[in-house]
Amino acid sequence: MTLIRPASEAADAGGRGRRAATLRAAAVLALVALAAVIPLLGPSAALHGTGEAAAPGTGGTALLRTVLFAAPCVPVGELFVNRPADGLPGPTAVPPPRSRSPYAAAAGFLAALGLASMVATGNLVPHSPARIDMGGLYRTRDGSLALLEVNAFLLAGLCALSRHPRLQVLPLAAVVVAEALRTHPPTESGPLLGSGLTLAHLVCGALWAGGLLHTLRTLHRRRGTEAAAALLGRYARMAPALLAAVTATGVCSTLRRMPPETVLHQLTATAYGRTVLAKVVLVAGVALLALWARLRLRRAPDPLTACTPARAEVAGLAVVVMVSGLLTALPLPIRRS
Image 1: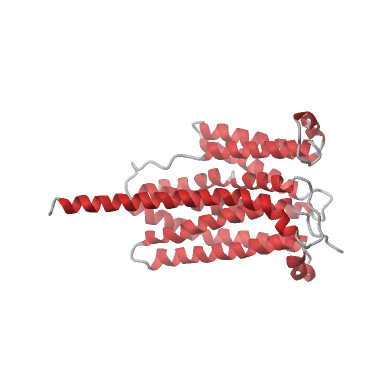
Image 2: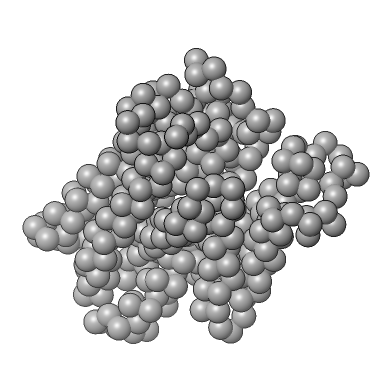
């Protein structure tokens, strides 16, 4: 009997591990499906009954923007977490999780290339390569910014594969700056202020989502060690500041798009407002999950039980990124002076 019991316990542990792996795989597949469904079907749902017309290829644009926004989160999160992780207590021989930065850079490169091809055809979906005027991209502001993003992702991928992956921060910064400038053309009132708000919003969002994702990946390697709880605690101390910055910059950007006296009307009457409202609800839900994880980290006998709401928080942040990609493809609300 004493020999059989450990074997049965090992079998039970193996079964639990397989079930957990199956659940994680199912969750990833569900997020991948959402990543396609929200950008592709979201425009028609958001525009329904508003009287607004969608631009051609809105669904494809939203999908590519979603990938473009998600791609920097992975390397930014790795760079953000790995350095603090180097000084954690406990054994230092535990290797960090395998970097996903090259794959993220490849995805970002393909998304940026697709968006550049659309800019080269007059912001239309190119139906044949002959209609793409890549040389014409150099003659327009949007085209130059699109080319900058393509080249920046290519350089970020090369840096990720090099001996100095921290150099990725330079091309990734170029991507974020280019996106902030693209969102606020010179014809807009106060474009530099708008670009500054978008820049801070994108950086803090990438640090929040990417940092939490890589923290959980690192915890999986260091589970059961003193360093695991210390790493999660370090991230938890930084997360409230990132949440506050994302919220403040998002609210300010929304008020610039929609004057305060029209916000309540436009939140339900325009596609842009409806999507902003959905994003606010999602961020509020993610904030509650972050609070739940923080309470577990402080009060639970095992601090690593905070990983359960933290994983849900990552999934919620992924949906927020998808909605953000959808938001950029919708017509802006008309601002009346």
